[in-house]
Length: 302
Image (cartoon, rainbow, N blue to C red; front, side, top):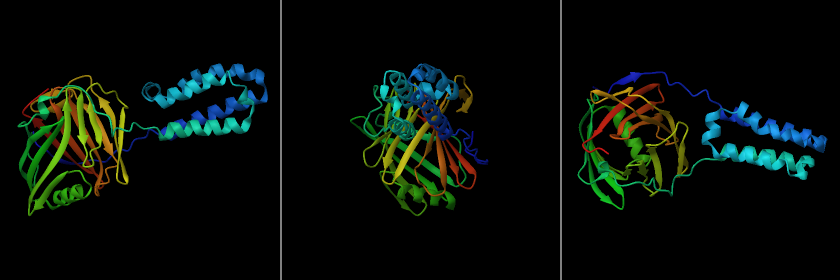
């Protein structure tokens, strides 16, 4: 199995959550006006939750507490005589929309939990499955484990100028917590929490950002602010069958898409993880439309 650079057209997501929010806000405003016009019409508010479930994709209702918060507000509206005040209700509708738009899981302070995984124990090594042109002598090993934080010491020889520029940008963006570039040799450190519950990145400033939880559901989102950027990871797929070719077999994977890193030349990244083998692949999607798949393996498993 080899790592191959493929010319792929990056397919943009067509899901427009702001359009959904617009329908929410419009629905709220219409029902408020109906009630204000005649207090007797307050009975119409009991139809709001059903209406919202109709216009809103069920998966968002299930995963986003902001959506549930909106529904709870409408239930409480039935008991509020203040609905007759159009100014206050307009402000309330806009406030609800603002909550929905801005709500993200800030992941910086919470540990992923679970017991220490053998993948993160000192001495465990990682390797590249196959080969990538212009990349050689790849070495990665857990150098230390302290308070659940695994420090991975990695080195690689890069003769491809495009990849070398990418590595330099990665250093500038703070992906590595230490290391250097000497000629074609690159060395650096990465920090992670590996448990039987999932994997978390430990950023240079000490903040935590979940890579994946093994019980994740499609649509789960994790964010953290780092400098002027907000890094966002969203679970885009949870396979229920062995459909990902890896190491001579097919396995189930959970895919997380990362945006907001701010590395020049990189559009976004994807992480593929497996509950037993951990992180099994990283895929980079470049701004020029090309991509690079990096299949990985660990000598230890969960």
